[in-house]
Image (cartoon, rainbow, N blue to C red; front, top):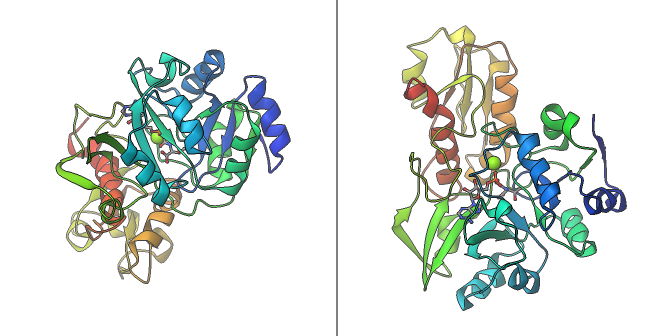
Length: 324
Ligand code: TXA
Ligand code: MG
């Protein structure tokens, strides 16, 4: 099992010698390695059982560093950074020669982000290299939002997990590609579209949702999935099709009388979608660990982080819908 703690020197030592360390961010926990050390990056793919076609996001602490990871940083990236970085936003930029093709899965572009977590920001400032880090879960499973989630699934595969508490945003970063002054959203995430739109034009036609031919490689239709079957839709309706004593329920606010209380999770009793995003993945994990037949989840309002939650729930339910 991995050690869990807040010893940044220890974390830096492991990373410097080419080992993996799990890092907290405001979105989800990441499984980090020196982005410039290919042998270390290989360990990420192995530990996660991640296909080599799925590129990694590179994490750093400042726009000066972003400018050395990317070959070119357009003006609009600085405007976005001013408002949202550090924060739950990943920019896809042309990569510099320093970034190994292994990190970008052979693409000429690199995903870069500045995470908003004090421990990880401090670690990044101390290190002379940026960190490549995907979410710290086995490929295809729900992302971790606590150090214990990482320990439960990957504890055997890394020496150290930095414990930064529960992630404040709780859902992965919003990924965008810049095209002049327009922005293409490759993955809905922890930065709401409404906020992005205060700074840039978001091309509505180019918001990528579930598809089998993803623009962001690795954004497969079935992803973020618990082992249990997930049915997405009106819970009242779906309850009629199942044995109510054998279901888990994930709703925004509502409770459902026929279902055992400890099988039900209301993501935000106050109806706040940001609060719901924060507890979504822990809720999926909790219900996945119970002896149940199926998890019923209801779509959230299509506003703010509700959109990103719906995207994740759709992907979590996709396999079953398509009988794969
Ligand atoms: O919030 C987050 O983004 C978390 C934390 C740890 O930072 N990271 C994360 O990484 O969610 P991961 O590996 O689970 O998802 C990264 C996704 C890839 O699956 C791919 O869709 C996209 O980022 N991506 C990375 N590099 C890209 C590139 N060069 N072009 C297009 N998409 C890219
Ligand atoms: Mg992931």
